[in-house]
Structures are given as structure tokens and as C-alpha cells.
Length: 245
Image (cartoon, rainbow, N blue to C red; front, side, top):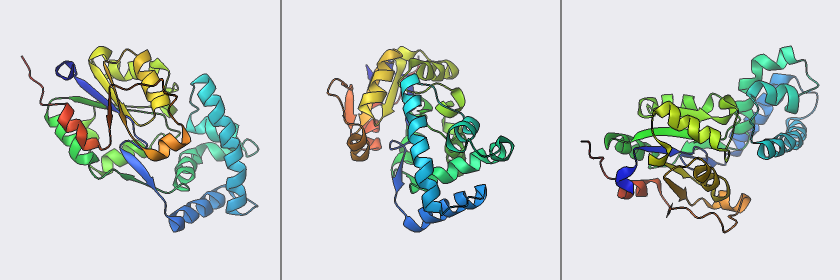
């Protein structure tokens, strides 16, 4: 089967990058968020209020499989009482600070090596990610010199549809110019990533075991990947250099 794979699409959060707790960094993000909007309460109180609102937005996204844009996220869900003309221009910055309050996002140690090598071996690479941010992933790829290795990057916050709906997978394959049946998806969430991969008719589903993900969203037992890995570098054992006619 692996000789038939032409494209490898990867998840982002907890697959290519992980969150590392850093309380001073997180506290600074909370403070900057509160300062940016001119909150009249403490950063901690503001974030508690925003967390409750974010849960509502996230629940709606999971039920409808529709992702809000950054603008909609902040003007409709997170800060609806603030003037939209004030919030809209800063929505991107607010999203980045909201994510930074969780910790620093750093690449897995072997991520860059694996990306470069899979590209060298002739695979078309792409990213398919559920995310509320529109700029964080492209910025990271640019900063780490990885942008040229990805044929396409599909983010739910921009595309509008999210996993496990098949639309986001099919759009990624379409933009990359590859047959979904000759594509593989590598993610960390069995309950979402495998279902979406199957719905889209991808040829293979691989799960990178991530304890934090499984703790939050345990597998139902019905989510059977084609392969389970524990490090990204294991992909290099699975996908040899492609043979071109």
C-alpha cells in the first residue's frame, strides 16, 4: 500500500508541535490580552469568563463541523459586548494571546528532519488542521524554513469546515492535485482524525499516540488506524523513496 501513497497530510497540534507549560509566558499572555481589550477586571477573571464562552463556541463547532473565523470568534462569541469595530482589527492578535495562555508551542524534536526527508523522498506534503488561528501555523513554517516543503496548508479557521467532516480533507487533496485514495493522514486524535480520513476516502490513516490528546478525547475503540506510531521519525520506516516511472 505504501508504494501507492503519493501525498502525506499531517495534523498540527500535538502532531507536529506540542504545548509546553511556561507560567511566566502564560501570565504575560493573559496580561497582554486584558490590556489589549482594556478589561476592567483582572487578567485571570477575564480569562475565566472567556473560557466559558469559548467552550460554548467549541461545542457549536463540534456539532456543526463549522469553524468560526477569527473575526467571528471574537465579535460573536468571545467579546460580543465590545464594539466590533474595535475588536475586529485586533482579532488575530487576540487569538494568538488566547492560545499562548496555554503555554509555548514548540515543534517535536524530529519534526523538521522528518518533513524535509519525506519531501526529499518525493512525497507531496500538506497540513490539515482544526485551529482557531489563521496565522500561527504559517508563521511557524516560515520561521523554521519549512514553508517550501508543504504543497498546501488547510486551516479550519480559514476554510470554514473542520475535521472530521470530509470537506477539509478533500479540499486539501484537491489543492495538492492528488487522489484522496493515494493520500495518508497523520494525526493524534483517533476519535476525529480516523473518522475524517475514512469519510474522505483517504488511502491510509496513521495515529501518533499523544497521551494528552487521549486523556481529553479517549478513543471509542471503534477508531482503528492503519498504523500507530509513537514518534514522527517512524514515518521514515513506513514511506520509502517513491519510484517514478
